[in-house]
Image (cartoon, rainbow, N blue to C red; front, side):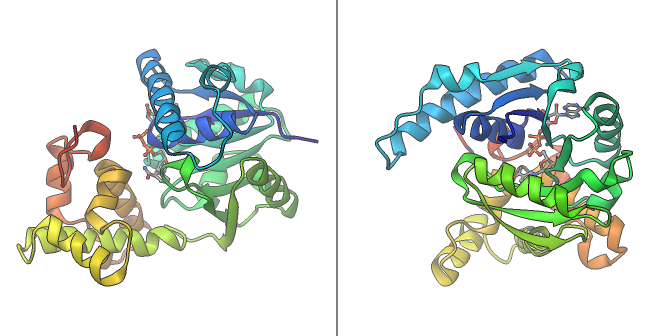
Length: 284
Ligand code: NAD
């Protein structure tokens, strides 16, 4: 049987992409955030993304914008999640925020509903501890922009059951995604490496070893990467990068994860990257 109704909690960079991807693959989506203005902005961004995606699409299949939008219910009311078959959580990368969300959804969602945490670094075992269904909690680390990225990192928490893994695999197959399964560890595989790389690239900029453009150029020209570490940081969001590296620092108690002071300063100055138009680069 198809997993049909999916709750998406958090309508920021990732929640928007997850909701769009789900709606485009025929799911009924309940997108929840704390403020109506955030949801209005999310709706507008999904419309823009679909228009943009349609321009670059290689297949003949056109995306019906109205049909996709109509499949998403935008709401600040968590109670709507009482009908969810599956929930994908994408709220701010702060433990206190996530903890609050999980105890809320645990009380509202059906007992057999699986919770997938789309976190950059917070251990899945810790997230599961905020619920009474630790066996039904796993990590699905989506890549940004979600509708364009074919693969995810799936994380097995300490108590995650095989049935939960199977349900999540089914969910991802319905979304057209492939996956790699890893065991739980702060930052998992991808972000234990990526966050250190980005943080070190910010130190290079702070130490005036090279400009942001030249740091990125080395990764693109010499290593064949599609994007350099600072461009990637702007795409992810500098606030999310800082929160993630702080999670790694706190969990490993290892100074190699200390956040670069320049990264902290940029976040304090409100430079979040692409999402608000200014980071290491300026966006129109
Ligand atoms: P974001 O700051 O763009 O969005 C977070 C959203 O969560 C905001 O709209 C905020 O209002 C909402 N939120 C906060 N508390 C909430 C609550 N109690 N209930 C409902 N909504 C709430 O952040 P993002 O980049 O979308 O990241 C979301 C999660 O995805 C984070 O855990 C992040 O680490 C992870 N992630 C991010 C990326 C990326 O490239 N940005 C990639 C993979 C995973």
